Image (cartoon, rainbow, N blue to C red):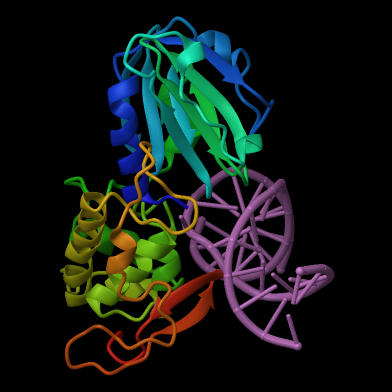
Amino acid sequence: MPELPEVETVRRGLEPVMQGRRIVRVEQRRADLRFPFPDDFASRLEGRRILTLGRRAKYLVCDVEGGDLLVMHLGMTGRFDIQLPKGGRKQLAEFTYEHGKDSVHDHVVFHMEGGARVTYNDARRFGFMLMFGPGERDDCAVLKGLGVEPLGNELSADYVARRAAGRKTDLKAFLLDQRNIAGLGNIYVCEALYRAGLNPRRKASVLARRGGTATEATQRLVPEIRAVLEAAVRAGGSTLRDFRQADGALGYFQHSFDVYGREGETCHRPGCDGVIRRIVQSGRSTFYCPKCQT
DNA sequence: AAGAACTCCTGTTGGC
DNA sequence: TGCCAACAGGAGTTCT
């Protein structure tokens, strides 16, 4: 659920309490999420420092002291809550930690040096945590096949044109496929296609080269993907159902949606009086304006 | 081999 | 109010 902007928002929230800090203790409350936890999950982390807390696409990636790579994915409903010790260096007993009513879905608690607690909660358990040793990290399966990072320099009209060549799938599915561009999800694909004025049902091959250069559609789409993601990161992500920033604050980009969740409402584009439609593609809702997305 | 369908799991929402 | 079906931000696996 969380797409790139939400994961980046979570990363920024966790960074001050996790990066460079030692994990004192790990409470692992069940054997699996979407996948089983790694063997010795807790013991491989306890007593070790998180050297870096990074993000790749929708994954949180931690370099752990000693050479392990910790890879975490939030799935649809994963979130982290941070509890800080009241007044700084106090005892655990003095935490103002209130178990939410859904604490049955608190699956992992990281107790950090300095007293912060970081709790992973995930109702649907589509998220996961995996670890890769020094010899395994280079071919870590979940990260290996990912396409380019949309906010990085590798995303270009040429790259997209190359990936889209000969593809018979529609634009929506092409952009959701993490092997092409890694980090987009249902919401931001809808929003980017809207901004670029492209109909989600068109074939991905409209993005392929014509006569040696990327098409005008591709030239339009690529900057819009960047723009919508950057704006969403600036807004702290989008809050729909469960998403919160790690400090409990709400993201507010959902107020800027042009199409997502706006079925039956009027198109925002100046001069367009289209009505936003919802269709189903690849089993997921697509929202678009049939009048100005062509 | 690409593309589509199915699957995991729980909570919320909307219609009757 | 209760009940039930539809739906939810993801993505690996399995089919055709």
